[in-house]
Length: 319
Image (cartoon, rainbow, N blue to C red):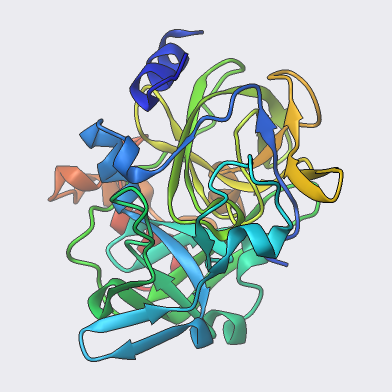
């Protein structure tokens, strides 16, 4: 029986190199395109996520930004039954808006200031109508790197980066996030990003498998290379709990073509998600209680009652 995304997420919520570090499908494939999603709250979350593109793959002409995309099927030698076979890809990583001019992603996606300046951060790379590929977006949806605020890349630990954009984002909401280690094994999760560089996918039906890892936790998220840097949300609260960074191999050969590697929900190695507490542990914050008292906009609240934008400013030294 065909599942809707709302059904998948409801069940989850009420049950207890840039393309390196591959990921995989656990149980059923719970990835959905934007046009398949009816939950407006989820679409709003997706609206505040970005695809990371190489600067040379984005060409701005007037009010339009042309995106260089490629055949997903040909690029990965896919079998015709593979989901999204007819789609295109182009993003090499994913990210999320955590302050009006700050993107959060994986550290291995942006390894240096030069890599940052060579990256474009693109909102709106998603399929909003069946069969219509997003080969372009409005030029106003493309942002550049003004500063690599900070990053960390530990092979078996935390992996994150914060990027200050060239200008504030005014037409996408700042996402809420949780820097406290409050998740528990079995808590429901969803992830939004660009698996294998594809247009935005929302994938629920996942849970925390092992919370007791240094700087990260393990989950059974349906993610691939290209999802690196994706925001991983608490499916109950819709607050970001971590950053997708590593996982199982994506594909297996089936004759002379490839299909997604499928594991049992509790099988294979799982997908690694950087804990946001790893960021505050690496870049100590300043006077957070005082910052909390200066909150003016409740939409910027994050777990722990700290204002998100001022928190990011305090972490980055941008004040």
